[in-house]
Structures are given as C-alpha cells and as structure tokens.
Image 1 (cartoon, one colour):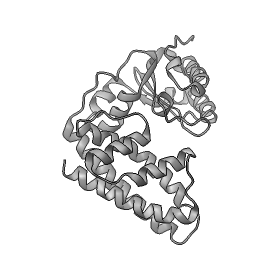
Image 2 (cartoon, one colour):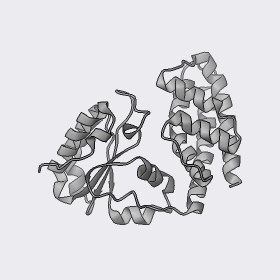
Image 3 (cartoon, helix red, strand yellow):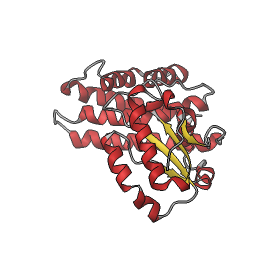
Image 4 (tube, helix red, strand yellow):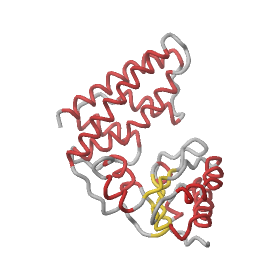
Length: 248
C-alpha cells in the first residue's frame, strides 16, 4: 500500500529518510487500519542528535489486536536499527479516555507532533490543570526515589553516575515543560531553554540541569569523579522542583 506522506521536510534532516521508509513499511503492513502517523519529540525540534537521539512515532489506528502487533514485528526490528523506537499504537478512544491519566505525555505529543500521514488527532487536545499538576508531582516524586536509589547503588564506583544523570534529566524535561504550562508560560522547545525557564519562573537554581544537558550533548564534559558531586546536587534540585509543584 503506497503511503501518502506529508510534512517530512518539517523533521530534522537526519531523520527524514528513516521516517519516510518506516512509515511506508507501516502502511504496507497495516495500512488499512492506519488513520494517522505523527512524529514527535526531538526529531521535530532543535535537540535532535544524529545517531544518538531516538525517533518517536504515534500511530493512530482503528483498532488494535494481536494480528496487528505481529504484522509490525519486521518493521519495528528494522526501525530499531535506525533509532526509531517501537511506535505508540493508539486509538481515538484511548487518547480521549487517557488525557486525565497521561496529561504530560499527551501534551508533549500535542506540542511537538508533526503529522506525516492522515488526520491530526492531537492539536485540539485539552488538559485539566489538576490532572497535570498531580502527574507532575507523581513523576517528580518517582524520579527522586529512583535517583536516590541509583546513587546508593553506584556508591563509591567511578563509573555509572554520568549515565544516571543523562537518563534522568532527559525524563525530567517533559515534567519541566508541564510545570511551565501550569505556570502560564509557553514552554520552549530546546531542553536547555526549558531548564532555564523553569529556574527563572519558579525561582529554583537550575544550573545543574543545564550542566548535565550540555554534557549529554557533548558541549561540556563531566568527568567520572565530578559526576558523583553533580548527582548529589541534581537530587537536591529535583527535590526543590517537587516542593514547587506541591505548592501549585
């Protein structure tokens, strides 16, 4: 089934070819069920790092069953080699009925989505303020617990702290964007600018987040010895964000 794709020029240059081929494979496999394909996340913004950043897609279908999942096995296997993670398979009912449970995740898709096939199911989504505040609090408290556990697990080891920092701060960015939305601020796209805006709006020292993001992008290097000290400061700042969300 030929894929009538659009808007590929709005994706990062290094992601366009892989996304085009992937979407064609999806349509060949389950095309009659597909209502929309959206690319979201870093591939549609300024933070995409070729060969390092994952490419994220949301595929809206009429219905989901085991046969459909099996039909996508080969496509997903091919995509993983191109840094395309397994797609979010969604139905319109699932989206509408999940906005109260996953407001942060769907707000991220809404704000970053580029529709490359079919209809736009995301641009008109609206979110309840209290649902988003509650998920922010839940996510921050979970991040705090996990990061403390990781700190204890690493202990005196010279390796591992930097990896923990990179993974954790990446997962924190959508929460920061949600905090800005709650504060009436339009979130920037660039991750560093998000961290800076959160620091300014909520009066929190966000320098450690910026330091880690620069390190992850390769602009600055945090050595193994320094990473433990940075991780300690990072935990303190995550707790500070948690206190701010509790007060919203």
